[in-house]
Length: 283
Image (cartoon, rainbow, N blue to C red; front, side, top):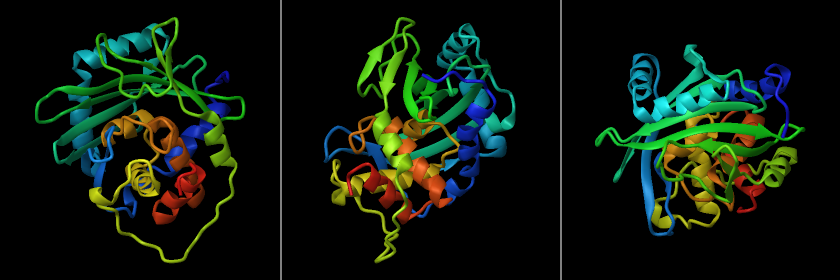
């Protein structure tokens, strides 16, 4: 794992996400089913996910910060020496609704980290029932060459694991989420190969989606880019309800590949989704 100096080494990752903060919301993919369930015929639908701003964002952030789940995770972060950032840009909030799916999620960024590249607390609530459905404290670690290596996740007491793909426990109680570093590095080192023939802006319907195939990958990639890479992977996966592997990767690893390609294209669209899924080996 890479030692973080909180200046130059961290800035590359943060700057990349800031560049994509606004273009992500202008993604060209139509909204539709985005949550991936375990079976091909069972898709959780998160329609028209959107980021909140202004009063809506502040109100939701204050509400979720009062929950026991947030307080427990914040206490854990403070025990690690980290602090919750207080500036407005350090909070990301979003909302998604669909058939049998409704979720509002807030990401609270942390600072004063020891060896992680970045960290955040993510809290997600069902606005209809008030139930907390997502509650994570995630520390993102990178390799010496700046590639996402693994994520150490803490959850509230008695919480169920939400993205435990190839996971293991650490001595401090964190769940280590493997993100397939080699696949991410290969994606970051690949050259853009734009195929401009027969572009299509139409999103597949749930009946068209093969959960393990190219269509599912491109659809998920489009929704990730629509949310935007200013947010951490834990926020994006929580908002969209993606809880199983996409393209054989954990959701966190998949998000990293999509954001790498979106950064190279400086935006979103069919070409980004196609290129990301090509690099993931599904298209």
